Image (tube, rainbow, N blue to C red; front, side, top):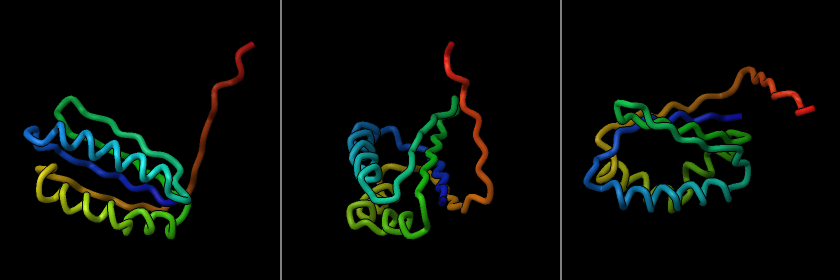
Length: 103
């Protein structure tokens, strides 16, 4: 599994357009073969963190290189983000604990 951690700060003046484009990108990512999950959190100081998981490096790279995603990456650098950082990581171990079934 490949996990991308995307940390960003939005430029407030473009927030409405960003919201529309982000919804489009989430739908596109979810439709990609090998997509596992995507969650976004916003910290009290305004930093946003998105965690995106793909089943393989090939699936991740197909998402990274999708033509519409590339266009929006450029738009993000030019318009939406005042700062961002992307970290792409391979999962070495994966542990989980699910809640027990209700009685």
